[in-house]
Length: 172
Image (tube, rainbow, N blue to C red; front, top):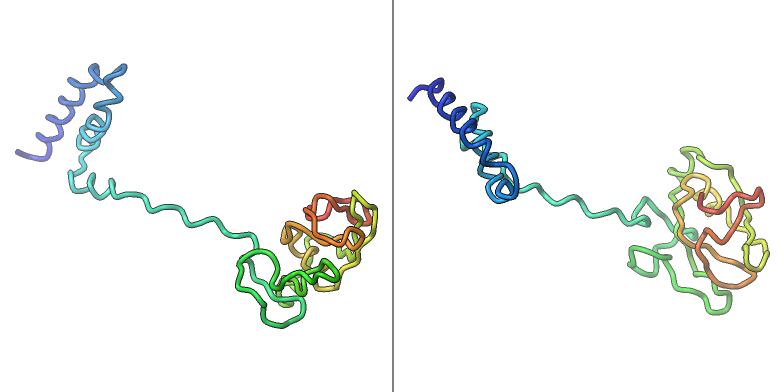
């Protein structure tokens, strides 16, 4: 049977079956109908099988803290945890013993927000000042941190509870 003749046969099959693929029955036989329509379009069954290869799963969502990072102190992290801080909280201060920051070469690429080195906690109204590398990290990548430290409350809170001295919300 020639290719031209096969095409005519498939087109006739599609035309004959089309009225029967409406309504509830279409849900059951629709995949078969799709294959017939595919074949009527001059494709081989092998082409169809290749196309039916399962789609690979999407890559895992990126952990927001998996960005390039360094420690504020320059020392290796004390923990291998992929999120949070690279060191435990110091019970005397409530601060972590070390913090993640963007590496210097990343911070030198320029800032997308103004450089700011202090913010005020909405709850207690106490101003907290930060080290330069922390401030530069916020200026380069405003959403880098999910929480920040309040020196009045002596603990960490979500960044949305703090405002920069110019009134903008920290992390925005």
